Amino acid sequence: MRHSAIYPGTFDPLTLGHYDLMERASGIFDRVIVAVAENSRKQTLFTVDERVDMARRATQKLSNVMVKSFSGLLIDFAQEQKIHVLVRGIRAFSDFEYEFQMALTNRKLAPGIETLFLMPKEAYSYISSSTVREVAERGGDLHGFVPASLVATIRRKCLGRL
Ligand code: COA
Image 1 (cartoon, rainbow, N blue to C red):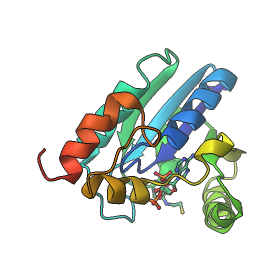
Image 2 (image 1 turned 45 degrees about the vertical axis):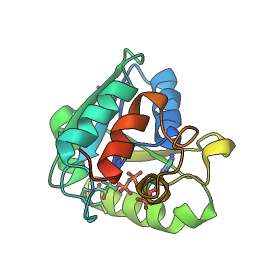
Image 3 (image 1 turned 90 degrees about the vertical axis):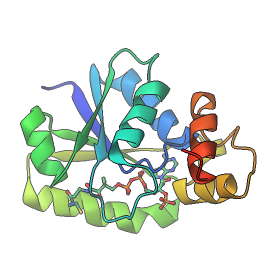
Image 4 (image 1 turned 60 degrees about the vertical axis):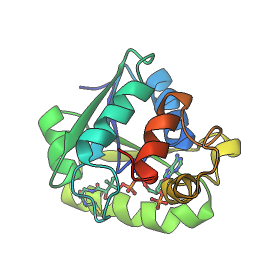
């Protein structure tokens, strides 16, 4: 599909920076699939079902965004969905090397698939999933880091109460 894109990630958990990217992509493409990686290289705190559920709740108001999980290679998922555009965020220069490597690996594996980079709002450029987990585990206030609708869920999980 020509005007569709996939926004992949681990989303462990989803942050306001991720949400900002989803909103931007939904304004550019007719349809956006948020693809939650089931088995990314990371040992995740949240299960894939929890991460999918958080993404669905956060994107409820974005009518052209849907959330799916995937396992295996991202390019295989993209080909299954017949989508040839991947969207990723670059928050700062430090993201560049990792993103560059991933985009070129994907391009080598599937030359027809392009990666487009968007920059999240600068106010979110320092937020990461691991700092969110750290703040939550120590009982810190998560407002301003993650969508308000996810604050209680993330807090409970990080405090071991979910
Ligand atoms: N706002 C806030 N944080 C952001 C962000 C943004 N816009 N963009 C990236 N991040 C942060 C995340 O918070 C996360 O932080 P952490 O390192 O503290 O956990 C980190 O950057 C990256 O996480 P995320 O955005 O969830 O994506 P990812 O890098 O974990 O996703 C996959 C990687 C899933 C896309 C990739 O591993 C993949 O495609 N896996 C499938 C296997 C495959 O095809 N491999 C071949 C390609 S190399």
